[in-house]
Amino acid sequence: MLTLLDQNIEQLVQDAGPIQDLFLKIRGHLPETAIEALVPVAYIESQQLEVLKAKQRLADQSRQEQMAKDKESHVARVEDLRRRIDTLCRSHPTIVGEIDRLKARKAELMKELRLIGDAITAEETKLAKLLNAIDGLEQEKLRYAQQANRLHKNIQPIPGFADTDLKNIEDADQIHLCAIDIICGLLNL
Image (cartoon, rainbow, N blue to C red; front, side, top):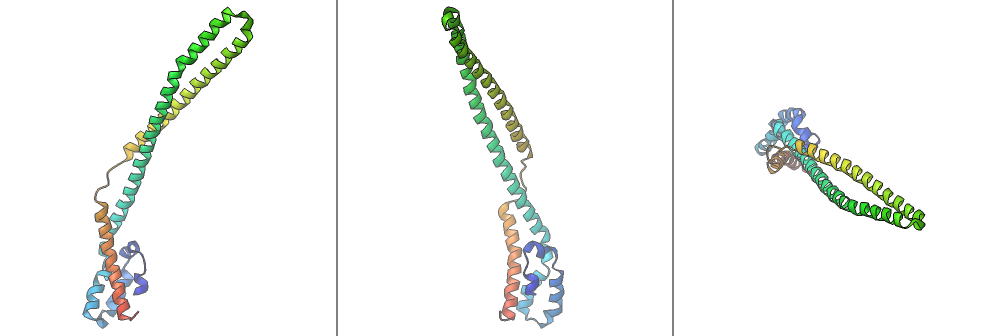
């Protein structure tokens, strides 16, 4: 019987038939205290629904908690990207102003036309890169916002309480462990 009981509680509550068969064969040779202790484990399948539901709720709760963490991470990333975009947008007028100043100087200083033209090109490149960076960050912000929204819609409360579920599993496991102790005591192990 110890060999039959040496399995996890989830397997035990799904198929205790061999344990029940063995118990029925040997119960006439057992003391009353051993019979009282072994009857619950022989019929431990009656705990199956509670144990399986508890395991499922614990797994669901873990998934929900991970989704909530992922959602918060995405929301934080969206906020970070928004701040970066705002910072870049505030620099736009500065760059545009510099381009205008350089164009005015070009008209006044024909001798330095080539040097000023190079500076204008460099600033225009910065502006183009800035706009590309803003566009790329806007797209990334939108993706993260959509992912955060999708995760938010998938977060659902799990009925029941994790403490109750853990207690149900622990109670069934105690029945299982008590039976092992009784058998070991009978066999002097």
